[in-house]
Length: 276
Image (cartoon, rainbow, N blue to C red):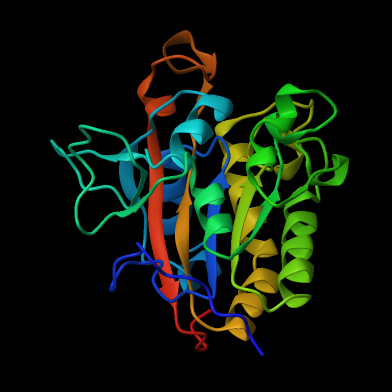
């Protein structure tokens, strides 16, 4: 018999309400312009089974560690129009102007801890270095979850990281029918990404960045099949920050250039039908 999650404090009609599987995927380092280019070219057919397109938003931070701390407490990328904007979910604190009756508000400090308290299995599949448990800093974010997974085959240096991450996600979801919150930090787009475009000599570029996003899309089917099998699913897919490839002299991220701050964002839901 499938265990029933406790939906207390999740408003009826909320994206997460009643979902057997809640999924939060961060496409680490993905720029908004690259995401739109690939979408417009029809290069993301599997993502198109989940979402209707990309919304342009502003990230709360310019690098992975800070952005994910913000995300997990409810500070997702912010819509471009003037706010305040009601938040999808939020850790409770006095004086919040963006927490409304439609917000999933919780007393825990972070979303994974909130789902754990409500009877969900919580899984972290790491990718970039801040999820690598070989150092203490790399244990901070994964420690918020009941289960965490990382090895070098899931990391930035493995050209098959996206396939490996999706295969692991499918395996974990198929093994247990418990209501689950699944978080995935997809590593492929983060540098080095030159090998997705076959660049010679080895050099990352906006073209290889976009090719890495296409590789993630190609790897999606095992996850989609698992979500269909499990029934009602919902979640968020977004970038944590972008990165620069020489724009105005900037390379990389952790600075305030628009290519870093502007990120793609989307929400999805499915009733376990053929759409996914």
